[in-house]
Length: 46
Image (cartoon, rainbow, N blue to C red; front, side):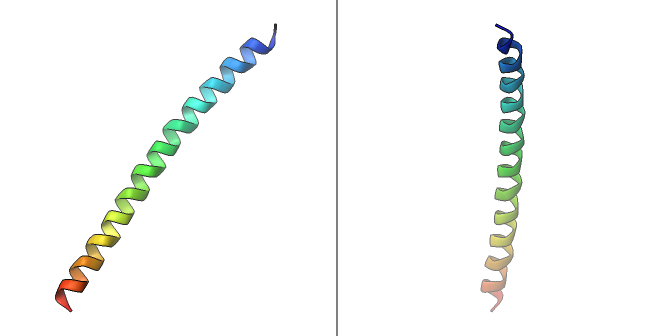
């Protein structure tokens, strides 16, 4: 049963990937919000 250690490492990698994805999502939402805000201001001034 040596695969057990490797499986634990895989779980750790999955956890890291999950945190990275959540960070990417937060950044994407922030960028979209910023773009929407800029477009909203531009639409109001037109």
